[in-house]
Length: 516
Ligand SMILES: Cc1cc2nc3c(=O)[nH]c(=O)nc-3n(C[C@H](O)[C@H](O)[C@H](O)COP(=O)(O)OP(=O)(O)OC[C@H]3O[C@@H](n4cnc5c(N)ncnc54)[C@H](O)[C@@H]3O)c2cc1C
Image 1: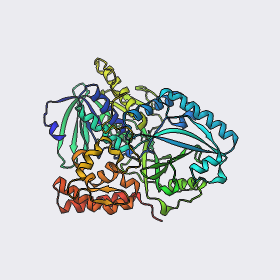
Image 2: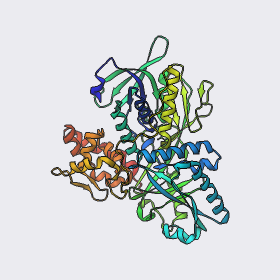
Image 3: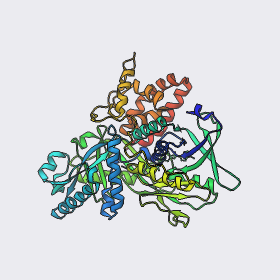
Image 4: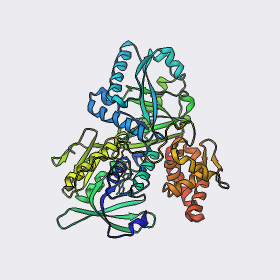
């Protein structure tokens, strides 16, 4: 990728700052329309919020309850498209809402039937009331004393970081240049104050580059203000981060195929318990946080809240020692007084701001709508630049790895159509060595991640190419030395690098462990 930058005279149509869901959606859309694209990510792709989601491809039942029908309609259509375009990563997941009395049963059955109807031909299946007996049969760990019956509905479930990698691969196949560990330091401007490019640093060797682009996009999520400050030092803060955490539990807490959705917790949010990669993700919270960081830390009260709420609904109590991993992500909520007069709201789900200098900043939205967000931003850029409008090409664009009917019980399902190539690599001498029985991680995957998926260090592999860090933080720390050795061999690094890597990985991953 750096080799492609050597041609100093390239003037990119789009330079996208930020390799999370938002930036990746823009890179996909722009390259599909035939524009030249450079995407720069300061850390690894999806290092921030985009690897810490609840893993749902959903319309947001909560927004429906708030009466935001258009927002839900947009999201359920995108849910259907993503399900069709990346079937190897998005799965149709049944959810059961435990009900407390007849009123609940009627309310949720009617509400969720409407939720289905909104999806039209993209519906994933009908919602229906199920009896108490059936609910207990399907969720044997649910507390029988707490429920009158259940209401079943369908939504999508996915692997966020894997979707990011596969989407980037799709964009690269269409000509995009995407770089991780490339931090934007500064914006380049012409005499009229218009942005004409960026200065960025290769975080591995500290080399600094200047690249030129016609449309610079700020897709840095909770860090958007830092880039806005580069544009206008002293600019008002636009973002107030809000944290959401998740706990990972063993499948014994939710042994069936159904997920649980608790529509009203003590703090008024919804709580999900969802089977994922043979574990259970439980979350989330909504806690205002002062400073954005790449590794936000779960607060004690958030952990206690999730354990307490889960305990109320399950007949098996999850204790701190049962938590395999805890991870936190940050929502970029609009700060009070952020809606200045020069800003324009495209929809309530995501917002695009145009700076005087011509930069487009997009914040908000969700993973589910990342394609549509990309479409809206590129439409906006075409208008602003006076380019001829090119129709979107992504509504039915198959994402790299596309494969129908994958078996989600297969520990390597997420490779989709790449699975055969990973298996071929595993057939080479020593490559099928199993590094973790528990997590089913093998040597060939590490090598594959380095060669084909731009994994640059141990954390990239263990946190985002396979999901070991989130699935079982302690077990992932055990295999870190072996992963470092394999990577060092592939990348030509020495024993010192291995040592540093293991120590860096342990340092970060300690934050994912719950200690008594
Ligand atoms: C707790 C939680 C649960 C969620 N669950 C779901 C869900 O289940 N389903 C769903 O659809 N959505 C979900 N969402 C929403 C979704 O995860 C987010 O909308 C999305 O991940 C935001 O992506 P982003 O690209 O805007 O931000 P980020 O993921 O934060 O990406 C921004 C990137 O910009 C990079 N960056 C910053 N500064 C620079 C710089 N100077 N140079 C280069 N790069 C830079 C950062 O390193 C970062 O990687 C959830 C959100 C939260 C917080």
